[in-house]
Length: 308
Image (tube, rainbow, N blue to C red; front, side, top):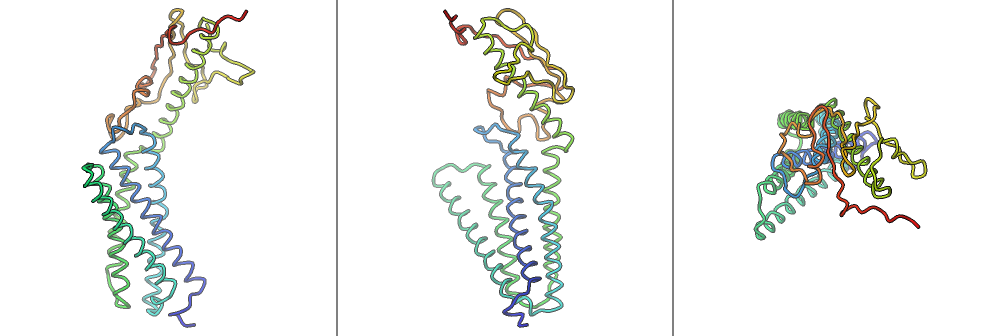
């Protein structure tokens, strides 16, 4: 077989797997670094903190799987190149390498265009500059390495091994940092339980207001909110399955209480790392039992007129 022109199934498999895991690693690495910038330099227009941590978990998961596969395939192909130097001239390899160079070059050019355009518009911020530098650095490293790899020919070099160790350390640091920012799996489970409790509180509050507008009175028990026609059943605590505490203060006021696992401000990145919206402030809670006092404004929530 002419190795310069033909590729067997094994070569196609390894080279496609190499390039796909490379792209997955690059995209997840950039996403991960972007989220770190979002945490450390928050945008006042963005207050959805769980979305940032979800992105960190996803990017870390992809990087944790794809990058070791990429390193393993690279190691195997480097062994093949050492044993048979002519395999460097496989058509599939050259096509994929040049495709990678094209995408990396296009990314760098686009990144610089966006930087200059934003600079002319006077909208340069630390957050934006850091993201531009992240894309420029990652795309630049990919472009530089594969351009060198094409030019070195069959000459042996220690650079691939050094590059593997260097990028492996950087990936490990990025993944570990994401673990500390997003929290451990156990902590994240507690956060999700607390988010469910807040959602339950919101549902109950909505049903209480609806009950009051229809009957001009608050129910004496949450069980009175159950409706077999609409299908609503008063939610209970997701862990203990006990009903939430409910107390009628006066004809227009009530209190809802729940026991939370942790404070909603207990983020590894700090309570002020990502701003919260005014709507979320009404459901701020600490660890342990937290009560929410609500008063219905009859002028705002007018009772339904009595039917004749």
